[in-house]
Image (spheres, rainbow, N blue to C red):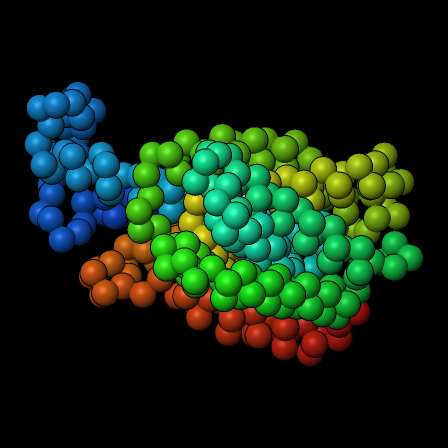
Length: 345
């Protein structure tokens, strides 16, 4: 592991590289597709090319590709930010929305709103259902795993796996009933696999303010997160209201995860992998870790979606399936390394 000072010194270079990579990937993902569209068509949008006289290229860009790309960036940022907060809050690099069952809880809440027909009549029903499911799961997992002011890694993981399995079982139960109605069942199946197909500006306007609010909440508590890295006793000694901070950050994490799941379905392991990579680059201090995790999550998810579309075209498998397939081995690697270091518990 590199010492802290060199990692701090490389922060400007890492930030500049990430920004360039993100912008380049956003542009490439907007331009690449079955229809041949050039940079001039993209630039023309800023000259008013969205009205009744818009060309077919401008229409595709504005109504299909830009919403998809921006939704992917916002979802990736929200999930990575949630993972960074949870890993700091629980003081271990294995915590993430997917591993702790938070994503499956958000999915269960959203599946119930779809099944009950609430999402078809109320705009905010789906995000509220996802948020409620995510928050309830977080609180249950934390209550099960915590004892005497400590949250052992093994207990935390087992609680997350158990509650997550329950969430998945309940979602499957609802799906089995919903299959009697083909349209509702198809919607639930497609949505639970996760992806950006069909993303619209409504999805962008839904998750963008939630991400902004969540980012503001967690970055305003970066000092408290840094103090919690040393331990709750140390944090309390430095003036941190541990209970209030923990509750606020759990709510912020549930809000971010719920919004991401509401617009993109089940996208797993972004919250696990991204903060770990960023921490290796710039260290554990949350002043840099939080915003860089959000940037990296946005870049990786847009890049993954771009590569899928480029390699498989119209036959691309769901994005959530790919992120889970890539993230699961990484999680096992981290778990085995934790065990070798004797940190289990």
